[in-house]
Every structure is written in structure tokens, then in C-alpha cells.
Length: 402
Image 1 (cartoon, rainbow, N blue to C red):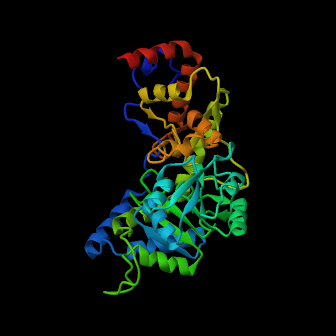
Image 2: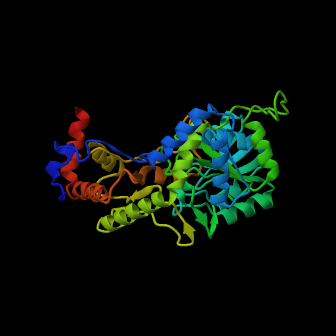
Image 3: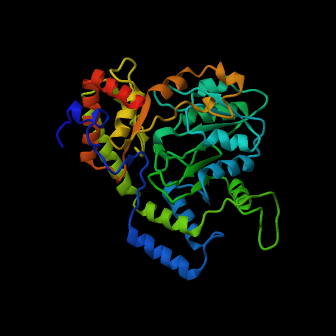
């Protein structure tokens, strides 16, 4: 496809480039034949949940892949965070990044804990350990780091903070399966780490997650908690809930895990294609990563420069009209969402980096549903829009008026 003229842009009356929308986090499906074989077998067994053989196989496969002692499969990562917080006996305040998906804060608040929002590093977008240290009070029980965009947090600094301040340390690793810091896989850091296998993640289980830990004691507690506290038939030994993964989710999780190298290869191919195409657009800066880290490249993260011919929001509107479902992650920031927005302290909190990122960052589609040609088309659409900003802005205003 040749570069579109401004008149060909959908916001200017043209035909959308992608009649079937391309989503950020479009699911990777993997080998359907293997998935169907697993589904047929589990139906034949009539063992659909309650830690069936596929869940056990998935947990074993995850521990082998990551090299950790334990992986406890759960129904989703948010519940995984809730169970993890209970297993760690957290209380009072927990320091979390403001620049992240709302799930970590909600999981804490759901349990009656108080999330304390911390600003992030402007380069890595992950929690700033020095700023976190300044937020520690006698009521602080833990720091919850988020490995954002597949990039590991500054785990050394956070582990030093947790040690010196006598805090528990846990990580939301929803974005970071198969990522590593200085040769060590995410899953080994802190007291425990929680992975997501939601459909939007590059390794998915339809819906699901896992808690990884090297602590035998924590793993035993987690297994009790995810199954109502049962320690055998008719024997409940502590408070628990129903956080178990189903056999069907485990079937998809195993099928995805078998294809992890292929998914990583596609992500790398698309990232390199975006890097080539965006080189000629200085207003759009593609996130780069530390060569000492292994990053799964699950997200294509673009920072729209201040003073660009079109704002981030205008570019997202242009792409949506074309069927490209770019996202404004994580607009407007956790602290600007309810129930946190009503708390007056977050209206004046020093979260300047978070607020700037929420106004400038957009993510673009990648994964197995996005071809190299599609990447070129997306970047050509952005190039045309920026080169004809005045006309595009006029067309956007007319669309909003109806």
C-alpha cells in the first residue's frame, strides 16, 4: 500500500485502512489443533476444575520455564494480587506506582489496604525507588512494583528499600512474562510476583494468572487460600476464597506456552519494523530498552513529543477512524480515577512524571494479528496526518460537531 494522501484518511472522508480493527493486545491463538486435543481430553475426563491435571501440568511448565520453585495458577491476575497481599499479611499502606493499570490499586483497596501512589521514572516508566523511599511511614507494610511494558523494575533498588525499611516486596508482572533483568527471569524477585494470562497478554489462558515465588511457606499458604482454605476433604484450616484456574484456561495456557518463542519472534519483528518506520518521525519517540534486560516487546510504546504538529489524543482519534485501536495508556492515571480521585491528597500530589506520560504516551498494535505490512500502513497513516496537521485538525473538529 502506498502512503495515503490526506484526502484518503478516514477522518477526511476516506475509507478506513483496516475494516477489521487492529487492537492493542489482540489475542495470540497458538496451535489450534493442540488446543482442541487438550479440550477434548479434559471433556472426556470430566475433570473441569479443582486443580486438574492440566492446571498441574501448567504450573510445572511455568516453574520449569522461569526456573522458580513454585507457580500457583489462579483465575486471573487481579485476584492473584489480592490473594498474594493476604498471603503476605499486608496491612495499612502499600506504595504503588500511579502510572499503571488500575488493577494493583483496586486489588489493595478491595482488601481494605491503602494504596499510596508514587511517581515513576521518566525513562523507564516504572516506580521510582527513591521517591518510594520518601513515602514510607510507620503504616507502610509493602511496596508493590509493576514491571511495565515488559521492562523489569529497578529490582535491586526496590529490594534494598524493602530490606532497609523492613517491608514486604511484591511485583505485578502482568506485562513481563518471559522478561528478565541481568539474566534473571521476572518471577524471582521480591517475596512473590503475579503474572497475567489474560487474553490481551502475549501468552494467554483465555483468562488467568499465576503467582510465582521461591518461598515454600508462601506457596503452601497461597494454595490453601485459592481453594477456600481447604487442606483436604472437609478440612478448612484458614480463610480462603475461590481463585482457582479452570482446566479450560490451563489448556489454553499450555498451548500458548508452547508457542512462546514464536510469539516473542513476532513481537521482535514488529518492534523492529516500527523502529524503522518511525525513524523519520521525530515527533514520535519509540520506547527503547536497556540491553541488559530481556523484554518481551508485548507493547509498542510511543511518546508524542510536546509541540508535535498533532497531539497524542488527535493522533489516536485519527488511528481509531482507520480501525487502528491505539490506546492512551494509562490516561488519566490511577490517582485520577475513582475512588482515588475524590481523595484531596491526590489532587495535589507530586506526580508530575505520571501526569505528563498520561498526556503523551500511546500504544500501537502488535502480536500475531499484526503483519509487517500493517505496521508500515499504521506508520504511513501517522506520517500523513502529521504532515497535514492543519487539515486533519479541521477534519477532526468537523467530525466532533457531527
